[in-house]
Image (tube, rainbow, N blue to C red):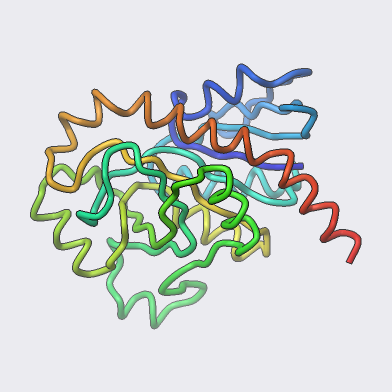
Length: 229
């Protein structure tokens, strides 16, 4: 079974509409949808924004539904000037931008970075075609200040920033579940995101979900091959 987690309803709408044999269960204030997409067993949810919601519902997804892999899909804000509106970023490395380095280095179970499963990264990149692969930075902040964006980029050298990715990755890592994060850029690095997000978010969210749809059959085959080993 494939677990798919996003933050917002707009990020799961296309996938939910594609589900057959759909059932719903409420867990900690969030609806978990189970069913099939293109014949693939899936559990789908929108966890809400922020690291706490993301980590809590990733753990519930793992404990109650036992996914073989976890996909995170959604939108993000550009940090690097090399990343443009509607570009696809595949996160092969995720980090927290709002935690001090000495905290990350001194306390367990924390890591400087969490690394996605290489096979899932390749499948996502193939599904997205012109995707950019690299680091994604996560923090409990909607970054609406250009100076703040610049500071996060200088600290992390991440391609983009969002509010859930590293928390999902952190939880999946501790549970030894392969994961990958797919983000589509909904605002420019040099534009005010509180303006551009409202305009471009729905289109970016739909594009991210379409990539997941293209990935699903190939992920099922990859899971089957792993189980044969």
